[in-house]
Each structure stands twice: as structure tokens, then as C-alpha cells.
Length: 376
Image 1 (cartoon, rainbow, N blue to C red):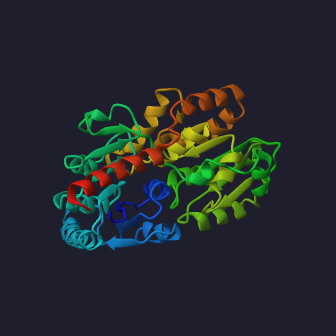
Image 2: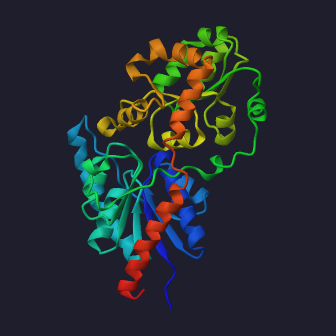
Image 3: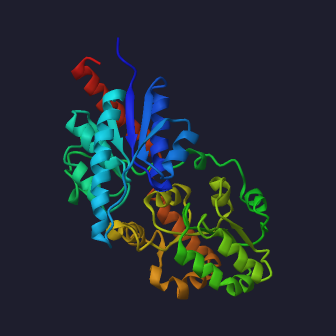
């Protein structure tokens, strides 16, 4: 009798890694309801809360990222990396997975490296249009590499690549709220154009500064805004708005729990250019202004943004130009229906509608092959 399917999914650090990972896990459970899935994350990172909240167990590794500014600090990083590999080996030995999946983030490096050494088949999910260093190294041993953009053979063996797109949060795909009701849920006016500003779970300083410095423009614009500041900036944002007497056309929050409603309410989105967010915009056909973060490895957010801009599917504003141009461009664009329509039409062409299920099927295929070979 075959053992239950056992899968390790490793990675995290940001919602952009965690939400796709949970979507893949959910899709595996749909195909194999009795499958056992164990997540491996990085201690102290957000996956240690978000994954259990989604109903899955998780083990933490003491892994951290390399410090590019202070090389001496990397002595401790190398120690933590070695310790993480030892712990990853112990986790794999105890759990006995049939396959290991890496979704990016600190923990995926040691987990998938050790899994490969131990003969466990591995699958990488590369979310960005420009592959990171860790995934390029892991790809040498990986059996399959699921990607979201064309042209990734410049980074990976083309025979291993499967174009799947990035999985997104399932609740976004079946919104059960109208635009009008969604806008009212934020205390705003359904008759007005609405711009959604999102800076990720922690926030984006440049985008938040643009809003705080541009409150007078917002007041005069006849446009309303849903502004998600992230937890790092919420107190500063609220104080700044209060000093300006409060603005009825501006809804301010640190976190939006119902993103389906926020997207339904918005005519235009302002966002960083994380791969997960871009996948959501494509699926939901949202016109978007992208302000890539300059603080990410290999500047991959700029490359993600340009992949859309080159197909007339998004507007791009550089981080260092945002304070001058962002709000003016957003207010101008949201009042031009033809531009919004063209952006929506073009971004919809880039959407992948069944990414999580396609990746889950590839994961299960690798696991079944491994079980047949090893009598498990």
C-alpha cells in the first residue's frame, strides 16, 4: 500500500512568497486530500504566523540574508546558513518527503539544497522575470522549474522550464462584492474615481512619503484613495493626515484584510512591482502604476515592471522620480477612461488563470515518480 503523499514547501519572507506557497499547498490538498504538507520557513519572518493561520504546520530555520553593505556581518550569516542546513537535513530525515518545493525566500536555499543532496526530487517556483542567485544555484539540481515569464531559458535549462504563471490568493478570484458596495465598505463615495495605494505588508517609504507630501493635491483632486501604508508607517501616516484636518476622501489603514473588496473598489492601483502583486493585477485586469523598489536583490522589481510596460500593460515611474510625478500621474490617468481601458485590456492578456493547480500537478508527478522508484 502506498504511503500518504508527503510534501515540503520552503520559502517565505514576504507575502509575495507566502501567498503563492499556500495556494500551491491548497491545490495539492484538493488533488490529494490526505497529503501531508510541511512548510519550512525562516525564524522571525512572517511565514511563521501566516502559514499556521492557513492551517499548515511549519518549522523554522535560523537563516538570514547576506549583508551586502557590511561584509563582516556575513560571518554570522554563514554560521546560520551552516546551522540551517544541519536542521534542514534533520527535518527532511524525520518527515521523509517525496518531493520538496522552493518558492523563494531565505529558507528555500538550505532546504532544497539538502533535499537534492539526499535524493529528494525538487521543484522551484521562480516568480520574477529575473532569476535570483539562490534559484540559479538550486536550478542545477532541480527536476522542474515553474516560471511566470517568457524568456527564462537565459537563466535555466530550458528542458526543465514550465511556464505556469504565479499562483495568487484564491479568494481574489471569486469576489462576492460589487464595486459600489466595495467602495462603501471603505466609507467612500461610489460616484467618484478611486485609487488604491498598496505598499506591501511592511509598507513602501517612497510611496507613503508621496501621499503624505501630497495631501493638498489629494484634497483638490476630486478623486478618492484607499491607502494601505503597511505597519511600519501607519502611525506617521495617521498623524500627518490628522494635522491636515482629516480627509474624507482618503481611507487610511496599515493592512487590508479583504483585498478582493479593495481591488473591486479601485479604478487604478499604485503599487511596488513584486511578482505576486503583478500576477494579481493581471488576473483581475487592474490598470496599475508600478513604482519598483530599488532595495531588492538584482533589481528584479524594475525588470518585472518593464516586462509589463514593454507590452503597454502598465505605467512605470522610477522610485527617485515618484515624489515629483506619482500623484499627478495617478490623478491624470484615473480621469482618462480610454487609457484605463487599454491598460486593463493589455494586462489581462498576460494573465495565467490556473497556476496553482498546474504547479501542484507537477509536484505530484515528481512525488509519484519518486514513490514508484523507491517503493513508497
